[in-house]
Image (cartoon, rainbow, N blue to C red; front, side, top):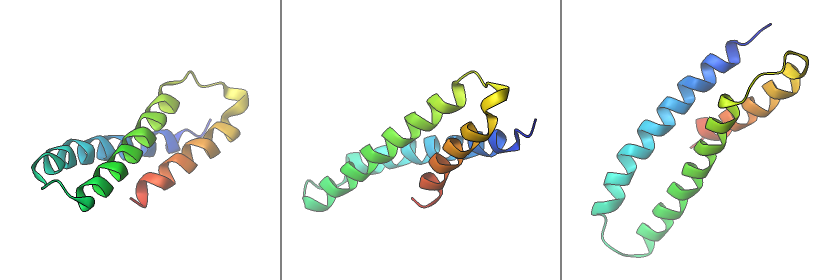
Length: 83
């Protein structure tokens, strides 16, 4: 069973959580203006996507559905790599 993609997904998840940790501090110190609103909205979207990736990785893996599961995880990872 090829599960190398899961290792990559965990790496992406760790990087995403680190990014969220640092950008939260950055957002706290931004002046209140429209740019901060856009930044916080984008951060919220990224936080939601990170949570979804985390839920996927935490699921029990059904060996019969590994192909479909891999596609879903890879799609979630693709979003994180482009942010």
